[in-house]
Image 1 (cartoon, rainbow, N blue to C red):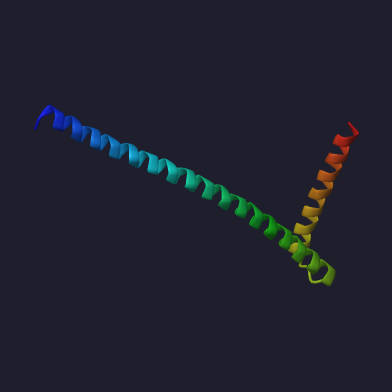
Image 2: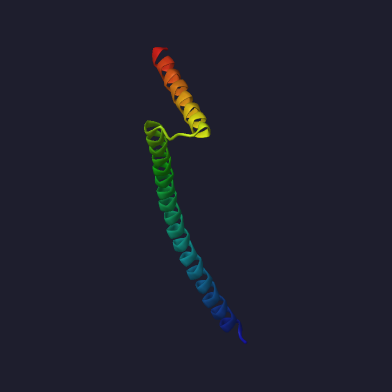
Length: 94
């Protein structure tokens, strides 16, 4: 095989590698965008779950069907919210 032919084969292989690299870069960008979309959806779902859990707890409490463990958990959440509100009010006062 002559040097020209070897150089030509090398150039063809190099072009193939460059094309594959560019394809992989495009795929990576697409996958990163998809990941960001899925993370956004996950955050939305977690938020919705938390909101629904709070509504269920409130409904149980108003219906008088709340168990002792649920009541204690609700009291902990309420105390946490109250402390957070107090902290925010203190920060506003400063």
